[in-house]
Image (cartoon, rainbow, N blue to C red; front, side, top):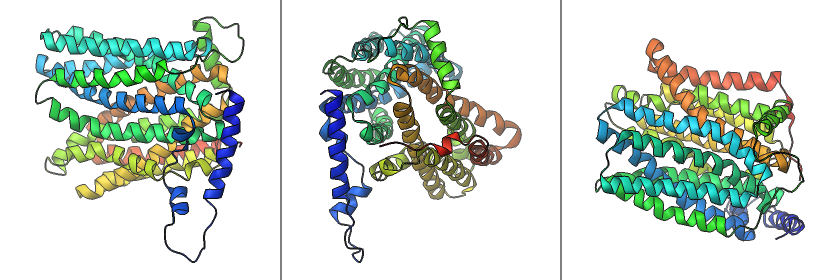
Length: 441
């Protein structure tokens, strides 16, 4: 499909959506199919773009499998060392390569064929999963080897993530990018709920079973990448093959583009100040008598899934900057309210509300980045996005755990949520470029 054909198809589907969503008799209280389609998640990108449909299937299945490995690796590490410190080293082993290679991988995505780069990075990820499976089958029992495999796999993920994100605007028409992002986030969030539950069953038989399922599901991601068309840079450029100067060039562009810079800033505010997950074990033990830990960890993701399934309205919002700010404020306030809840069901419900707001903010951040930035810079900016998305929650865990020591659990939890909401508003007022941003059709 050529770019002009994709644009033409996008215009046609937009007109069709308007016809489908034509206002029915206002006196009727029945939810007609037309009304439901305006509320329910928009699946048109899956119908209209075969390349996107294959990428979607590959991403969902591989993400589900990666959740099995995400549970199996710390379980195996603890079983080998009986040390929570060694389990903590896994986070460091994954974070450092991700931060470094996300920026470099984004630069590569701007100067190389994105299909080929996705294939190479995905193949390396698959190889590391197979290596994890092999060491588990052989019973190697070496924690340093486990750290090394996690580090290499994280580096491959750091290249694949910005590359895959930069591909979406090339295979989906501009006016359907928000719908494509919504589908991606909703499906991956659902996988993040199902993956750990399935992992808990498989781990009863051994960690090798989790690694094996991960390796098997990842073959669909490789198949999807193989079926992509060639995606060379659209514009001729004198950039090198991902040199340090190319990374710096992308960072300079970001620094001089207030809309994008502020979208990253509010994401950091949301994740660093209001992320409460590091407090879940302590809250479960002290407030809910040791119960509900599973519900606490699943609550945010469950809210995101519900929001995604009822996200038909998201693509119709033109003032996406305002919508992003409102979603971040809602996330902070919902988290703060959950920190005050004395009943488990209410805490879970409020966290789910926060998860719904978080999904909305994530969709608009990604959409603004993909549609605002020029194509020859999308890879590098997606690299920065990957580093922020990966680093923010981990810094949030550190913030939450650190402040709970001197101030207590409730103050650390509630104070972080309130600080997130207040600071997001202050940033929006002091730097109005993001609030003024309006998408074009």
